[in-house]
Image 1: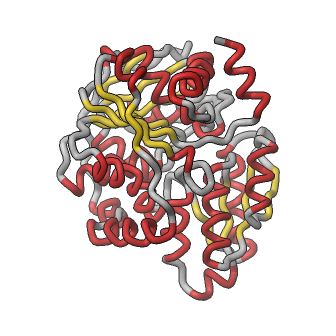
Image 2: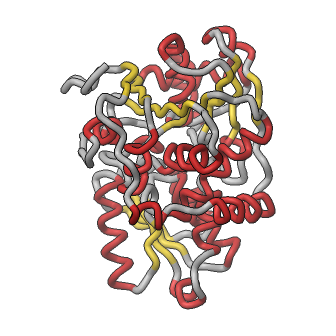
Length: 346
């Protein structure tokens, strides 16, 4: 399938333009194998390893062997602490004393707040007006100062960058920070340790940091593994950017906070342009159905963004690569009322 239409058509999208080799400048920024290994060592000493659970029902439904990476059971119920710990651990003494600032719809902010508390650093988070109150409370409980400003995550990011300059803070940008990418890569590294025979991985995509980390780790390790990204039709900015081979913004109306971005991070897009072959767009109601599916068949509670991979496999498995597939369930932050609505909607 080619360029998505103005109607944001759900479907499987294949690369339709030549790969764009990474520039020398980008290669100089991306973490080396030594740095990836160091991040793996540090994070394994700070965070417990989340399970990789076989899914009998999804395996049957998709006619392949499926394993679910339960990042929804991590210390902060998402994968975001991984990159944050590695990123903040690399800051100098003056940066640590001044503190850091970031923008987030919830999980990334929690990750930075968790790392800040672990390392004794002040953390501020700018979040859009649509921020889930549950996630706001979670960030504050970890010690972060939360500022609400911006109609979407990109507007919040612009303000966070401005405040960083004015206050002398270090700005941690999701999708653009190479250290975040190195930390996030430990998700796939753990999956490959548990199942060396994985030949495909399905990844929810917002700004692109997690899928870029998976693509880069596979390239560094020399692993032939098909990595597929999934977005909502209500937030296709990263898919459009990848298809166009250049930054392309799109309206963001998704209810899935982890997918809610109008464009990808520049570093993440560079990695995607170099290595990614497949993206999938699913519909909002399919995310809700996948939440209910995960609860009823796997006994796990996941948030809308984390449901993206399950939704993709349930609808498009026959068009997706792989026979031994890992699906990353990126987070488990969902309110009781939203969970109840998802279950009732099926």
